[in-house]
Length: 206
Image 1 (cartoon, rainbow, N blue to C red):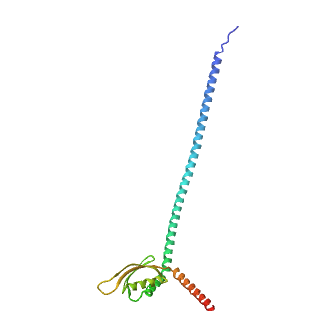
Image 2 (tube, rainbow, N blue to C red):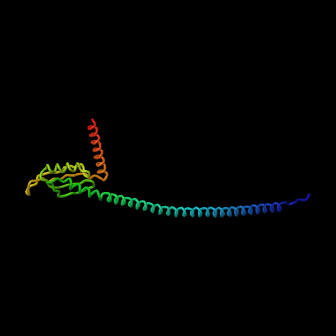
Image 3 (cartoon, helix red, strand yellow):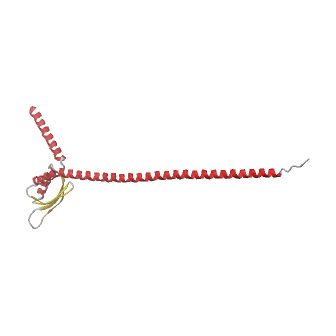
């Protein structure tokens, strides 16, 4: 029986399989490289898009910050303007009041009393002067207490002067009444007069 040598065929088959394996391995490596490159490009584009959105957000935030600063400055300017308007309105309201106050000071000043200084701190008035006697000072305080534009007189100092003649120097304070004060006082006085008149009518009827 003849002998057949199959070694060359098996060797060739082994080489073919090895070559096919190497080709498949190269194709797989190439596919993996392409996939990795594609993933790199994809993630790179995503990162770039996110950075672009972040830049847009930063720009929008800066714009909003500027607008907020402008709004705050406008609000501050508004508050200053309102404060100025209130001061102007207060001064306009107090202009006739101070005239009434000085007129009331002249009216309440009794004979024998001379003022040397009148100072105002807010709604508080400070009077300094000379009176012929302490009784004149008491009379001045009573007049102030009954005034429509001045109230709550308080005596701080009264002392006898020396040298020029008899008299007493004094210092007293009083509160200025706002515009609503005289109106309320006038209304109260009017109600009192009406009440007295009604009581008088009832007495006459009886």
